[in-house]
Image: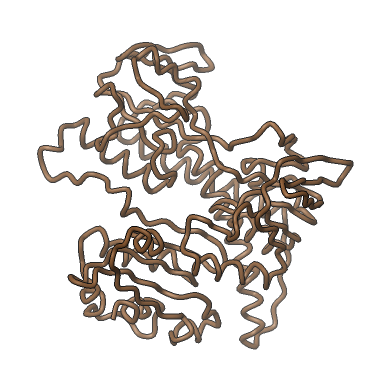
Length: 423
């Protein structure tokens, strides 16, 4: 394995673990507010240095754990960068010079990096990319977040929870434009309750800075100013320096190294996984791709081997409240003229949600009206990222709504809303 940073890549170093660690701190502050509503007296303030140390400690512990597991299995780890030198040759550029490696199979899993347009003068101080915000140089007084996809709304939630005033520039008419409108509406309502300003229908096109102030100009003539700007406008694959041409590996017009259902590129023994493959940019998907590639390389497809079905991958957004979904999307199904049974239950009808003082959101389950097979689902609310697992198992295994209803679930529990929605 050739790795230039920490084992675990962008997920451990930038994109997933650090952000969720900071979101957890904001969540703890929210718990303090909830405790006050329950009759407890509590105060909370942020120790920024302690937060930095905690994030770094979690990253290092995960790195050490994964590295130890790899070494225990005899995996050779090289610190550096890799590139292809031929169909079966890889060059690792290390601190001690280049190392040439002969390989029977090669896996390209170099991830992606934030997309930074020319009009955005990122300086790491006032104008930040996502990778300069874990944590940022300081907690912003007024943060302008550009981009309202998954990353943008998570940062909006995180910094508003940590005490920043936040303005979210939304290029469409709803946040999370790719998600269920009912899901987006719950999150928007929570943002407004927190004091987040939503600038809808505005596409940022220029950023300026004067001293400690930054200014964002939008294509509709509107402008907003603050103390910091954070760019959350997508990513681009890290394929530039792989020298894929040396091995005859094809790259598409967007720079992705795409593969077939076995994750094989056009060169059969060279595979791609993770963000660079152009599939769903989720750590869980990348990890499962790795497992399936290992099975294929070892010839284990002769035994039970299930191909990856990316349409059945569960995903979560770690805002407050959490958002999670899996499988078929309601809007897409109806647009295609597909018949669906859609059942929705609010958490306000759930005893555990009322006990815990957080009854925001709902559970929605989509099933086939003829067979009852669960086709998808969306959850907004406390613990959504955990609860979606039940729906994901049902979707992946062709279970019916009745199978969920007939499960004897714990009472009182948030999971009861799954059975209520399924019925």
